Length: 283
Image (cartoon, rainbow, N blue to C red; front, side):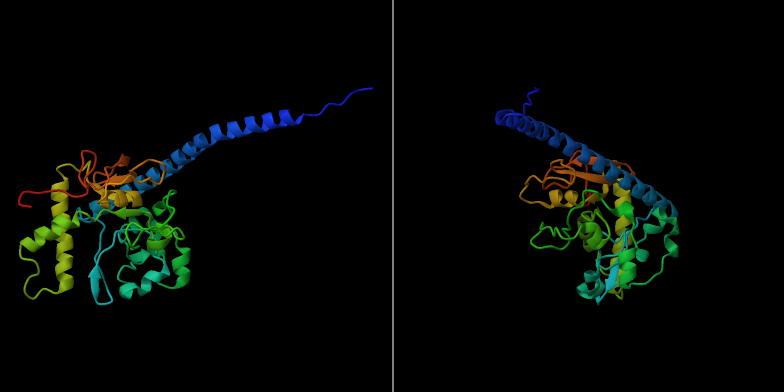
């Protein structure tokens, strides 16, 4: 007769322990590989946006793809109005829709999606939901920090892409020295409306920024993911985990058109690796 022998309890426990050990060893490696793939995709998105950005500047006398918002009796600007899909519908009722810049008004879109002009120019819910511009979606975008208080507070139920139309945000920190400069040189002119004044600030500011940034366009930030804003804005100089597992690291596109995954210094806008604004003589 043939004897049949099964595994003993000890042998089963040893096998289970070995499998658990292998999983523990492999999981971090798999997570790193996944983050690396997602980072590659995000950098690719930024390169496509940078190409559209360069084309826009060539077609528009070196101006940047930025617009002033004017709605509900207010004037303002947002870091997402340069490009991307429509905002979530809740923005339509926020200050009369001041920051609810529709996709068809965002200046960079036709330079990335040549067929974009054929999209209907309506603001109904179907249009909001159906228009997708995937190049503006970061694979690391897990929540929106836009106008959440106290800052930075994340809303994990909606991504930045679905909230305001883009995961990548225009650098607006350069506005601080520009506004200081404009106010120091007369501010609003007699007979000039508030909208005319801010439109002039935008144009003069972009012209001034282009002049200053030409000194080192390789370090001047045009666009960044949400991590870039959070790290730069933190007055407590804390460490933040980026979208792809890098501590204090942000995907950035610079004014010369190149993109990079940049390690930042919490609470600092100007470092040897990047610059969110610049100083010119007289500032």
